[in-house]
Amino acid sequence: MREQGKLFVISGPSGAGKSTVVFKAMEGREDLCFSTSATTRKPRPGEQDGREYFFVDRERFVEMIAGDELLEHAVYVNNYYGTPRKYVEEQLAQGVNVLLDIEVQGARQVAEKCPDATKIFVIPPSLRELERRLVNRGTDTAEAIAARLERARQEYQEADFYDYIIVNDSLEQAAAELSAIILAQHCRAADRADYLRAL
Amino acid sequence: MREQGKLFVISGPSGAGKSTVVFKAMEGREDLCFSTSATTRKPRPGEQDGREYFFVDRERFVEMIAGDELLEHAVYVNNYYGTPRKYVEEQLAQGVNVLLDIEVQGARQVAEKCPDATKIFVIPPSLRELERRLVNRGTDTAEAIAARLERARQEYQEADFYDYIIVNDSLEQAAAELSAIILAQHCRAADRADYLRAL
Image 1 (cartoon, one colour):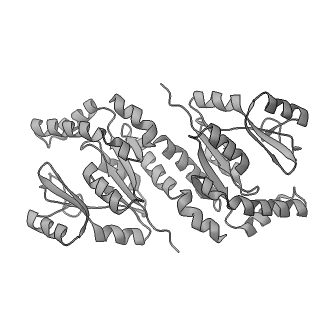
Image 2 (cartoon, one colour):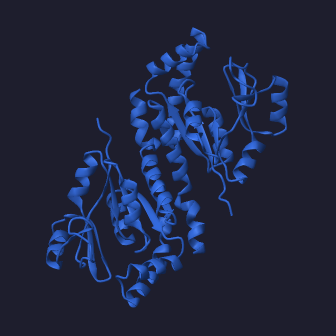
Image 3 (spheres, helix red, strand yellow):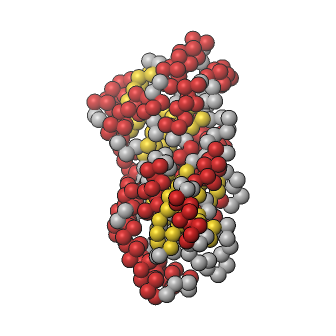
């Protein structure tokens, strides 16, 4: 019997490098997948539909909410973001660990529906460094960056909700920490007790 | 400021391969040390004083108990085993993670004195395999092996006390799991919240 996959919720300020850390940790591994969210925000240059996000219009998104097709959804900077439920459940059943890149609001919704989900908060080494990264990315206006920084400050207040905190200073180290957390969660005694009882 | 080391308690049936897994995980790492226990049992062929154990006589051991020089101690197959407290505390203060190879009784004592200790239970793939390993080791009489197997069955009843269970089937995998658990524990949100508040 193949072991069931586990669900990992990854949150953190925009610009903390969540996606980069996750993709680094996934290199060469088939037991990990990054859940692709649906969103109504416009694609940034270089982003592909079905890769970074499923880009859908507002009408379709409202339909997904109504049809209970989402594990969670949230509004952020005037756009909808949500996690397709069916995709996640199929992966877990196949023994694949699923990583969700979602905000604090969405993380709370998932935690309610999936209490076993492991909650990880990825942060930059400092807010100053976060600002530098957002400016370098060149995709946001000064106002949008200011809003993201204020948002980050607010999110930090909710860090206690998470099980783990990864400080993304060195990408290699951050990815190693994420991989370690995933492997360690598979060793939790609560999950392996069944195995033990069978001996 | 160097991060404080963490304490890891490793238990499991004799013959489960705890030491082998720990030594494998420690290869090339200076941030991990295996606490050396004091014991009154006789050295096995190849064992060195101060490496596998501090081999002491009964009189000295009783003196250590009386002087509160031990973090825990227990009796097992008519011999005393104990963990020198000073050694452990010095390592942790220097940022070194300390691994303790102790039995369930001792693990409970340590957990009371050090509630932050992470408790790991290492088991063989099956009791049949455990028996095979004990027989192959050739250091125990048939009666001693029978006693160890019965002891293992009893210890399995207490597996719920542990945070993690490592099944030592493949040594590489078991060592990788131990390393992952150690790294993941350093990412616990409760420990990194201070860092976050400083930002």
